[in-house]
Image (cartoon, rainbow, N blue to C red; front, side):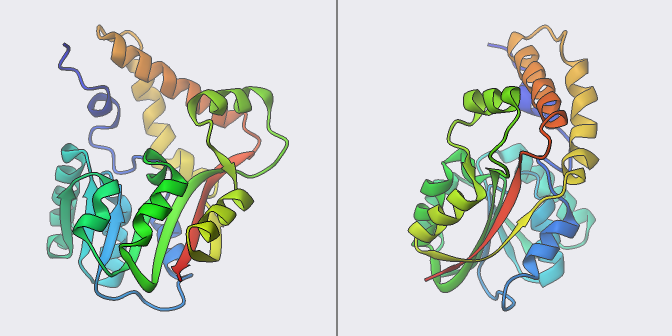
Length: 245
């Protein structure tokens, strides 16, 4: 067993663990018809870029859920540096267990993490934890066009075969008992700035790492970035702003 953790080597210390920006997080927050109150949960928060943006904007406690403790430790450190540690509570647990820990959630937020347990499964699982009339805001990797370059299609057929179109995801949300109030697609630059522009040189630097798992993870990351470069905007992260029936 090697002690080199590919995730730590590639993502350690990064503020963004996926595409996105505080600007987009707050823009989507503004799409909610009313300001959420009381119980706010960020599911699959990672290092918590959006957790901090939400806590700071709403001046409410945000419960940050992630199964990877080092990410949560990084979030706590950042919250302290920002002077808002009193507004962030971390929970090291599986996203699927949210209904066992939280009930009557006013706002369930999840950026780029629902796919870990499957988008339809995540929406159905979390439904019971969100209070009637409460909100769920979930971003999911979605096809944006039907004409997709062949190697892009091939990459996702292998890496994320369940990926759906934005319209299909809207239907999934409605099927799970939510009404979709609005959607927002992350702009292209939010994939690059502070994310791919940091990841790419890091991954290049790990291609000759002694650990084969690290090398494989690095190569996979470089391929993902290459695919993004020739994607012709055929896919993206779409926020689904939903109200629970």
